[in-house]
Image 1 (cartoon, rainbow, N blue to C red):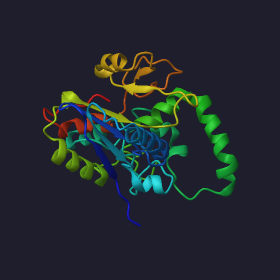
Image 2: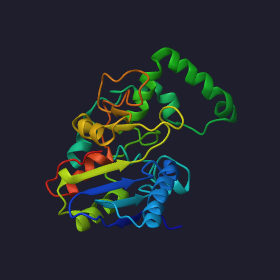
Image 3: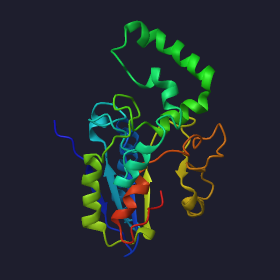
Image 4: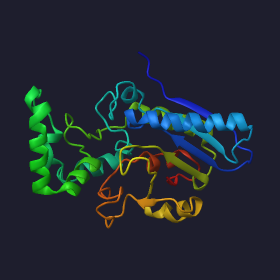
Length: 261
């Protein structure tokens, strides 16, 4: 089958600024993102009111993962850990493979052979409970979200080269919006799975937090690169993560700085 990334551009009523709303970078999470995008476009159509800034809806950055209900793409790569330059790949490959504890949980993360039915339905739970009791839940979360760049057969693999989805989307943005100053771009990338059901949280970097808090008064805003994030926060454990798409795609806009997102 053909796998495609769909893009809708809604021209804004003003001449400046750009908002990018992306979904499905983690495949199966694209269904929630797709629903949000559909609802937003439906409201624009029914109201007849254009957004103030041009808005780009990017649907299913990881179409393979969305089609097959997987977080990863056709190459077993997590695209939101793969958005790196050549220098970025060198940095993560030069790091200690166990910098975030991935190898502490290798019995869960890396399949050395096909699992037995007993392990799938029973054994995995005993193994998980033992490892959490030994290392702690935050250590497990940090290991998962930081990913691995050394174990190609493991889950949460960030890849060793830039994936086709990023090449395609980067070329599209550069061609159509390369003259938009990066300082005028906001990127919202939709994910699911963290935190209480039905609660929205905005995860941002430290540099962008102030502007996001101002734009969304009363919203829950957390910093994913804050090593002091509390144990119960959705941002906890992300301080070693590299390869976010919101940090990578800023280079395709004028000025080359990271977009806020």
